Image (tube, rainbow, N blue to C red):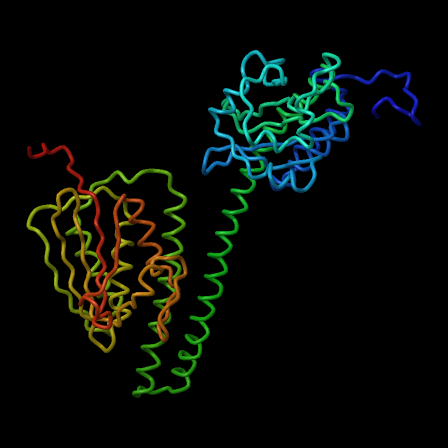
Length: 442
């Protein structure tokens, strides 16, 4: 109830809430901004409410772009289409906006009425808000008459008081300065909209996170299905065979390989989830020599049917880096790839640690099928396509890339033999040295 029945004012005075806003209107506003929906839809609803309820012909709502820090018009109402397109191309730095909203224009806490007479500078993009340039030279007939260069900005702030955008009144329908009561109501709506904008952004972050989680879930379901189906086939074939034979041995090896791929898939997804869920910075010292020795032993145990030959060259001194338990996943994935993509029964690769000025560089050189030049850039991408005939999920090197970033390092891949990728790949991981409490050399 808004106190109007069949066009006549009700004799019952409506109860009022914040800033003189009737309780019924406040509930309507709260219902509007409490909806969990995308930002564009939210702002369109807010703009429509302001336009219809307060007699506003033209308005814009600007929101801060978190990547650039600039404020951009997200919603534009009441302008012809060509003007809308021009206005949406604007970008306002925070410093410029603060300069424009001089203290002399403030009419309430977070509300500024910028009048044409008070402007010291008119920018080129200001003209995009004006339909008839000739109107700029006109003077007001009365103090409350609206000028085409006038605008009212209601600043929206986050819970810490930082500017996140504003609602801008560009033209009232009656071409008059809105009443103080209307200004107060729009300011209440602006404050509530600021809360809704923050909620909407958190909602979008949650949607993105769910989408990413769903993609991992879909991957697990799809790839484990691809691994388990042939695994069951080989195991059933072995059961029917009853006796040891060459076919039996071959099928057993394939079944073990598929089971190992399924295990690796789950481990890689676990690793990615751990990386993304952890806010703690790596704070423990690890000696790369010990890490690599453990990883090499682990890879050999995981491939009992392969003859894994490893050459290991490392400094005699300790090679400390700052990391966490996931560092074992990093190098296990690289070493595991070296075995997987090596043909034949023997998998041969060399592991070395080079002492640099401020970093230790681990180099893993294999003699596998190699990586073509056009695939090198994408090899660390999530779900990178696997070479034909090779099993696995394609997540292993994505884990490597995430962990190297986590440890503030660099990972690269090149040919073991320059310009001949078919002779094998060379992975290099450079991680910052951890000097600990030892005095540095001068």
